[in-house]
Length: 169
Image (cartoon, rainbow, N blue to C red; front, side):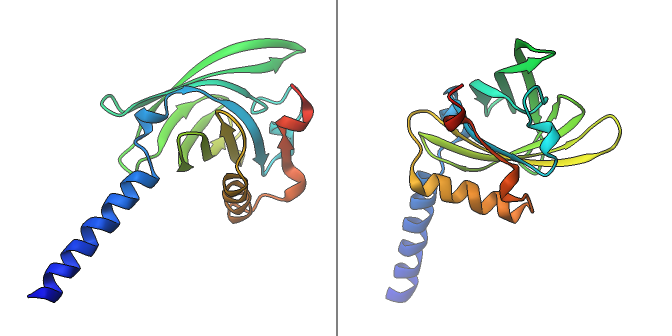
């Protein structure tokens, strides 16, 4: 009986710790800035590329199952402010229409960092995998490591990573 009780207690403690580690996505809503973006297709994140985005704000609505992205992107040499929405799918990813069809997913999050990946299929059927590290304040070593691991796991080469902090923009 003691073993059963201890097992149950351990399970509850582990579940509580997991909940603390990953806040609900709605709790992550607010101002964010782009720290790093990596892409399997470097053209998508080069200057004037459609995914060289400077994130401004993310709004997650867990009840509605939506996410709203507010960001800046340079198009034909001019900065544009964009708003794009996504709808949560059964698997927890978000379907987003921007420069084709996208599947967006948060891989790791805390109150100060967000590591995510996106799969884009453009109008020509070309698939591009992207990863991103977004921050509210400063980058923590652990979050940078999680971004690097996800980028490597998605098969994106290190030279296809853009450091937005070093560009100073």
